[in-house]
Length: 481
Image 1 (cartoon, rainbow, N blue to C red):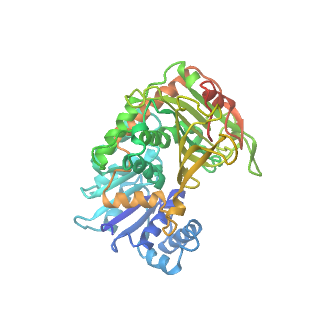
Image 2 (cartoon, one colour; image 1 turned 30 degrees about the vertical axis):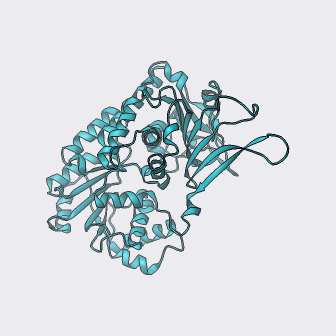
Image 3 (cartoon, rainbow, N blue to C red; image 1 turned 45 degrees about the vertical axis):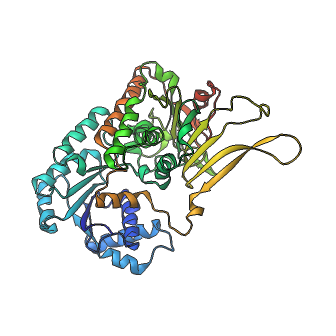
């Protein structure tokens, strides 16, 4: 059971809070993982009384939680923890009111979750400090994006760091809370099978793909300024790359894990100047069909400029300047309005040195699936029944949902929220991780600006632009997604 604390969520009426955080906290309460004294306070500008907010929260929670898991009596006991406080994060007087509302509790842990736009981070931190609400037992959670460039990320880290020590800052990337992402570390560091071949000389290449069937939905205003590179690749995909490529930490603690991830990010070979034309692909979806549903082009989505050249797809060929991975390309790909929803990591091993059974042998692949179904499969070659040595690829499949079918799969936010309450920052990002990622990404963004090309168009419901296929085809490879 976790420690006693106050969980205060700025942006308490927003989609993230209502669709993710409240359901996650409900599940933690349901499974008795929260201390009986934990209070949850949603903070936002809307003038609501507690009853109105509870009704809204219940409606959204019931929609997000599986029918069998939502019990009215459990909600009623959970709701006793939940309160709403109307305030404007830009007004210091409102923080004075908040301090009076919370009262003085020496040694009590307080978690401030900033589910807000990044331009409010500094203001909230300074107001917390000025009103005595940023003591040694407080922690602050920052949602991505942490800035939109290296310069802005440095600025955010500096300003938040003036109020909160690094050990009390939790930069959240929900992908790191996914069960299969943590199983990737278990697969690598708890099993002797893969370590000898997890390196150049045995691995041909690595693909990391996050494909979405959704468009920008209600995020058009934000997304049109960010694009796929800033929204997804700079954080989610580079974090996955770190877990694939990192060396084993000395201990499984926050600093040891962060140190190894930073080494990976610093070893990324810069993609500069005209290299962006050969090693990156930008795309933007046009009208098409996802499944049986027709969808408009990106430029016709709500709050998107009609002449926008923001990328909704990006593919990058990355390389690491390291002993383990020298010469092994890492292909990173993410896009919206793709043919199917899929997040996976594929480790493609080299061909056997001698084709004993003819040219029909295929490469062995380790596939780590993050969504929609979490699992791990190893693709091997086996003889098909009948006369002759005719080989076919087969899969040794580990479906985690089936293996642990008696146990409910935790949502990423459940695990990460509990980690914050318990003071464990292992699955979060340290300031130098964020900065190293931006340092590499900024060079690509600068190259795109210097050697401007309009994004390559691809119909919604497809696998992206043709140029992405050519990125691998030139090396005799192909996308597995």
